[in-house]
Image 1 (cartoon, rainbow, N blue to C red):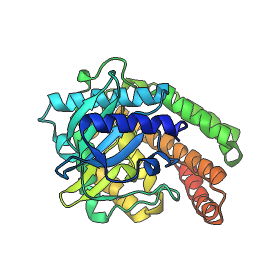
Image 2 (cartoon, rainbow, N blue to C red):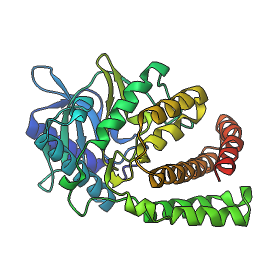
Image 3 (cartoon, helix red, strand yellow):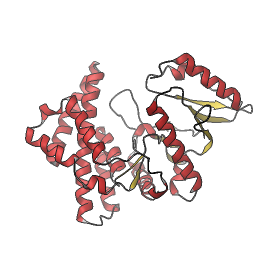
Image 4 (cartoon, rainbow, N blue to C red):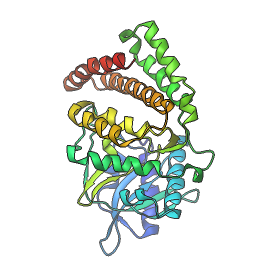
Length: 316
């Protein structure tokens, strides 16, 4: 949520004037969206050519961090045009970070967003798009992490221990025995989670960040990207497909047919990350249940809580 909308609008207007662009829709409407922390919107030049603009409008440290990471990531892709994933994300045309105004200007990709924020992660991915999702995951694993700065975000034991702590605060204790909770704590503290922090991770690999176009799927929003394990993004999208069990089962089947485990250690890590993401999604359901107390919201959460709890117990 953007707190000072008047100041935010002044920043956006000043930048648009400098770039000689104009918004395609109301700036106020974009800034009033409670789900965003920055200005996001389609803009056009004097000839009517359209672009997508993102502008930092708040002095919040986490938001500065998000913009810095997006800037670092975009420069890496600019300097490595041979990477396959360059074909699966909009081209960055102009940017500025650390100057007067932080912003990114991308080509505008015409397509349909495949997620929704209205209810618990309804996804619109089709069965015949599974191969493309796996292709994108493969392209992530090809990104050389040595080109990222040392102060980029890493997601190992510390990250998963924090997520477990969040889930405990949300009330997962009442669904599990103390022995099972202790198992969760051991799993979240497993040394393999640190050992395999050597793969690029989108960090928020979910339907909201997919765009279906005539050229196939595009992926956007890398502000929460990190260096993590090779299964992080797979279980992220697998977990979000809780309301599409056939799609999720097929994704798992095709992933296991493609991925070549190099050791028993990798297989152990795969099981660890699966349990931790099941736990994270249980926490997401409980959070959704608490904040969305509409009749439909309660119905959705109650429907999927038993399924998630059952899967966790089985995985343990």
